[in-house]
Length: 96
Image 1: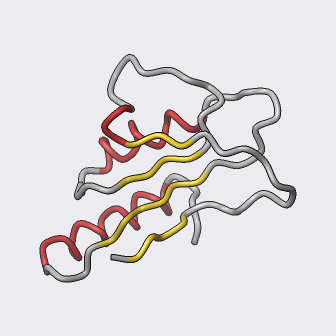
Image 2: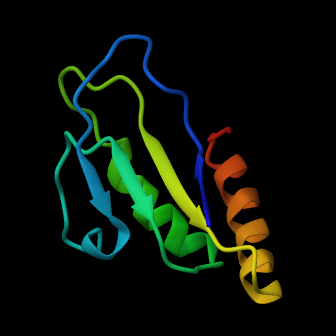
Image 3: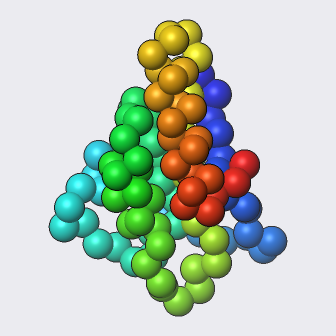
């Protein structure tokens, strides 16, 4: 597995506030959140939008947000799901 970072790193050091995707279910709200670790397979863009949308809430001192997407290339089905997520990330404005 290789972690993929889908957002720019800040120019100056800052404290990251990571969350696991499973914690970002409906009702979760923590505006300072700036990092999401996605370590489970998913392909549906709506779920991806829901998870990364938690990072888009404004908060003082927050500059950028990032998603660390843990990728498993050992299985064809997981590779296909990753490709769908990459298209979703691009549609949401993320880049490598």
